[in-house]
Image (cartoon, rainbow, N blue to C red; front, side, top):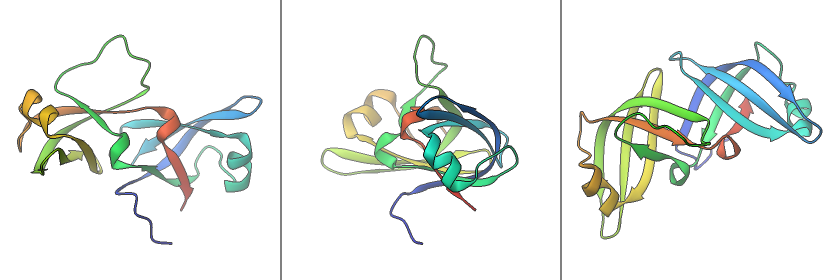
Length: 139
């Protein structure tokens, strides 16, 4: 299956914490960083997810926020350290490619945000993604 989702990071499930309806699934990305997905318990069962399962963590580029330093006091679970590879700007929006250990992320943010944060190739950043915005696909 081919998807339009730009961010497809391979990893391995390290924990599944089920609730009544939703589960928190932690994935160790191939580069060593962890990402958490909040998905339904039905999805966990249908995908056969358990510790050791090989998965792809999928995140739409519009759901990736960027920070230029450590972030404190946020509920956002996923904070992936990386380095800006490229910035493409348009009239109002921009696409920022970020190298993270074991892969690459794309973030679509406003051009004003790129300018305010002074993002350029080589800039260190933290990619922020809410756990509810991470989908998982079995590999």
